[in-house]
Length: 330
Image (cartoon, rainbow, N blue to C red):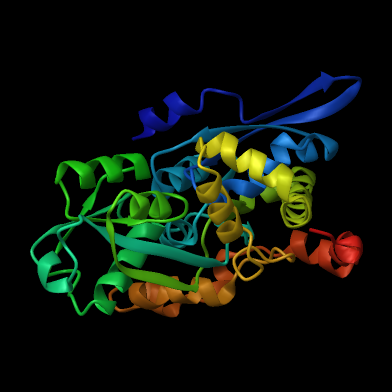
């Protein structure tokens, strides 16, 4: 696994370079998202927000949140776009990873099945595809199955498949009978004739921004610049629809206008993507609750153990965020 991480992230994590007479900090960040939840980083990059804040950001992609968190903890990528579950799991094992900006604080996944499977009884005994164990899709798949009245440990087999395209392929070939999908791929699958058995939408620490306490200690200014870029990118998403949709279409290869608009609207709602980018303590609590049933460390842990809100709090208390939205227009 270490070799795989190294192979993806051979770029230097961060260094100084001179670009157009301005000194930029070159920063490589890890991500596992190819969904609407990746929009803040894409907009920050495409709209020049990172560069305005002194950062030259490159994004490397991993197969799932667990591997993204591993790269973060191993300091292969000093900042990551990653969901809450692998950050919480890493923290419970002694890692110093923390969420520093909320990103998506409401998560929504659909449990999509093959067209011939339309009931829980028909899914029973089958397989459900997720990215990898310990990630967001894994956690939410168990909630989805329980909503259907199925026991995730006994009634189905949850299998690690990888990326959403890989999950869709497994679904198409019959390797699995259902898969956990989020926007825009749930909409794509619906158009292709797959069936939405159940959807899960709840306050949850979805794809946000994470780093390590060690990186914060050593590079607080880099972290400060990144969090400011995140906040400004969210503002751009909410006030410049055309720019945001261009980035979404570019990174997700969306040609279908209806699908693009539906995906953009889904990704940019105020409950999912709030103006004030605090990590969600309620959402982290929901991650801890099922873990606490079998892990004494999770039972003793508090949501605050997995976040560092100082940078978003600085921006909020300074009035910077409120000032951004004074002239909000859509």
